Image (cartoon, rainbow, N blue to C red; front, side, top):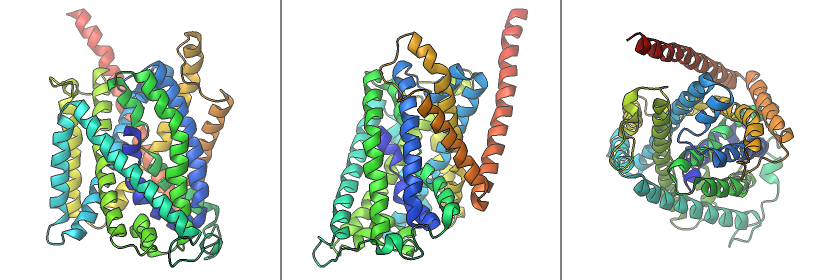
Length: 440
């Protein structure tokens, strides 16, 4: 449920409309390809997570599988990415609520949300888990309801409707109105939508039975992605023209408006807000645990390792909450453009993280197999692992030939180089410390 809580947020509820606008109905290809890659990456991550549960999860696996520098780079890159996602969730939710309360400034609403979830995350982790469970359960129920109504609308089984056929799927410029470039551009948005599901392995270290919990979550990821993501997008492109402005502003609400059921679209808006807040809650958890894990391995400020009596890394949580407050400030300064800026800043970072996970898995699998620690196994190893790596490389090549995507690729490359430079500085600092201690 935590994996769903993080993954079902702004990327699916808001970003899906952006993906459809870029690729048209062919965004289904983007979702299928990215979905296949995510399933494989999660299987690899689940294999390592069940064998070696750790608070830093994939950052730890990159460290022991590739090298210390990889653990540093991957951990802080993931932290930065989730901080951007965290901002997108709070901006998206406060923007919707501000439409209901036009007399209240959007930044005030965002401030209330951030403050509330700061309290939730500073409480003991079991309270956070309970809170997130019910949030995620509500989202799952809402999406199932959406899918049922959507299928009825598609086949004309809803009162007063006719079957839609393939009018919108193949008309309005065809299935691929923007060609392969559109699919490539859509892949970035789709990658953002899938981002966050990795948090389930970070949470494993704080569960009672990590091996069983990770195994269950990873095995169920296939049908979750198929039903929730691909199913929702398929209904959207079947029922509405891909260039309908309503899809960009609120794709789920736009579809439900077709049913003409009183209050159902308004109820869906409420669910979207709850989904965004749930994802924000999960991002605060994920960023704080990643920062705590990095600091504990001497890859971050020692102050971030401080634990409360209930086992919560308070300073690491406060760091994440601080950036939540920064997004509130930016909401006040850039109310109209901030969401787009945050969505674009995530872009290729997730692809880099997935590459690290695949490479770490390829390096660690033989060792884990020799030690007899594998309770979850990657399918068709190593062939499917190499295929996943090749597809990630193909994503990067496609991005390089798209104007907007190329900018995100370059900015992510610069960010990775900066973090790599910091990792070298950190390694030298760590090397000096033992020498200084020996001299004393």
